[in-house]
Length: 233
Image (cartoon, rainbow, N blue to C red):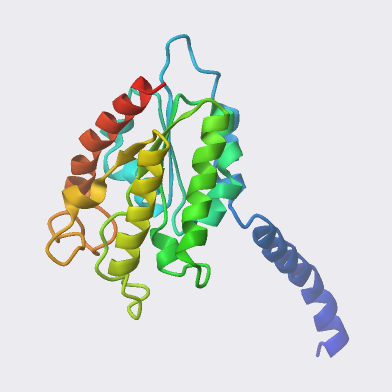
């Protein structure tokens, strides 16, 4: 029969590995490693290339899998990470946007902050994180497309939260900032919201994430906004 000391010695290596893995994951709070290998393989932009990086959360992350044809053959880079809040995106903005040297960044963020994925946060702080991303882009000569927060009537994973008033308030803050600073505002909300100010069932299965039809409604809006941003001085 194994005694307690023998069992502890046998388990110790596994426990150390588990602790080390958990610590590493905690240290990479913004999940910078997710795209590190892909980013290392991105060459400098070719002459005349109008590279676009899509920065966001799951809505952006799932886009390329739902409609890969939208990205195929274009200098588009999807840098969405499911579940992320604006603070996490801000931390990885240099690695996943600036270092790729795009002409344009399309920022779609804020819904997970409203869902309190990383705990409660003030809308002013969420807005500030998005503004910081926009200012970092501008400082690096990257045109900005500032997307509205998508419609959401309820969160399946946070049923106690009513997102509607906060989505409206944050979108108003973003639009006002964009208008005052000569930034292109991409209004997905007005184009896609139903009477409840959520995503209708024909555009989404869960009321938060677009389906293929939803993404195909977003795509021409995004490309029009990109073209508008490229024309700005």
